[in-house]
Image (tube, rainbow, N blue to C red; front, side, top):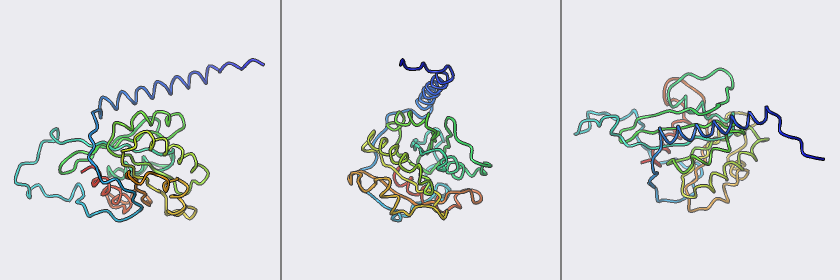
Length: 244
């Protein structure tokens, strides 16, 4: 029996996804694009240990500086890519960092969201790309353009955890030198998997010990203005350490 031709709707959706991926890549190149420099050399696996105390981006006092604060356009830029399956909490993470109120209900990201946060010495651009199946194909196109990858996992979504593992390891294979922060989100839920379970189910124990892979527990949810959420503060401090 001859194979059935694809329906016009399927072809249209496929074309739309391809166009969207091309647009995402062009926007990334235009807004964030640059040659990524390596700024790390420790190379170690790290499972939930407390990172060194670092000043948060809003804790420093300009009066303590001898020189005048550099103009915003003079600051160097660091890029962080935030990925994960849809519903893992990527958009909420960015909104908490930006001090924005939560969105009502679960609204999947169709495209991307971005946040730019200033620090004393550089600006941090965080880019989230939607986690739906059609968009995951394009994730690998952005990995080589960033300084750190944040991969969000829904700790309570046991059914789709194998998919999360598969996508994570594709990204790990794409750039063996890229530091990766795996965030085990929604740890406050009763059905959430433990950190030991997640380490095993995500195959993190098999990752090359010479690369930087971090696993952090979190329950990211807006809790007032700024960095009042402990999980978000922990992630932010680690990102600052990796980007400095």
